[in-house]
Length: 339
Image (cartoon, rainbow, N blue to C red; front, side, top):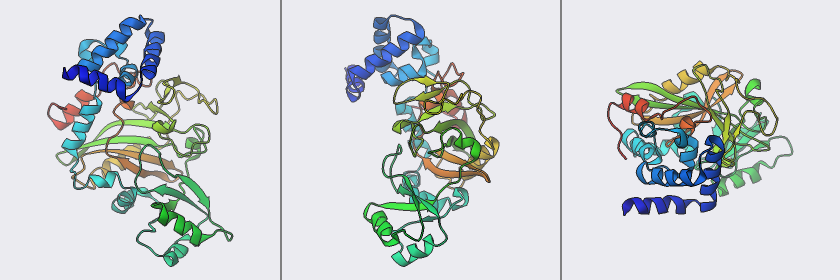
């Protein structure tokens, strides 16, 4: 009965329309009967605790029983967070201002919090500034107000300060992106997500994901419509890029037409090294997803995540993996992970 409830909950949390859209995508990829895919998809929801979107992304239509057991699911991802991150300090991964204050050494830019500073202090902060970037202190998935503002002699600094204060926003220096990274999308900072695990005071690199904006987007978040893809050991795009919004794979950027396969992230090893060092900054946080911008001077951390997207590194269309990342995690933590 519990498994049936789980099936109905999984389907009910999305929509039958979206579910059958995924069935159709898997049918086109595998050539298998839609009815058999629907039955197998329902079976996997019941017995592997994956949603229909995961079924498509993980390539479960082409996976054996044993291979399916190797995938990190949503529930296991949540269990990993509870195991590795102390709830007393987990707010550092949700509150962007708290993160900036704790990880100043790694973010490479100035920022201003209007909730603890005066208008006069803000006026002083904006002196000699040409552009700033507005962000909400707490948000996820690129939701909220994210935009660049120009500071010049005509700027109403008092009105900007009031806007920030009234809407629980803050500002930081606008990040200058490496020219090569800008070719992916010039309107957003295109970040590399580096996920780390810390065990016995040693930081381990788990995986990396490249994210990029499309169109006029000012953020690169997948949930806001951006693209994501896996990187190989040299920081190169392996296969294609995926859109959560459309469920489709792209070898060419949908806005610019740029061919993406083979693109290599500059200063990739430095990016990993930066995150491995930052991972040890707070020993009570053992599982972190760092979003890193590549600047002409080197990588800097933009923000961090407490529940890095478990689906992205296991996407069959963006990586060459035939299994999930669960064995990699369990090898590092030294125990079986249970939901």
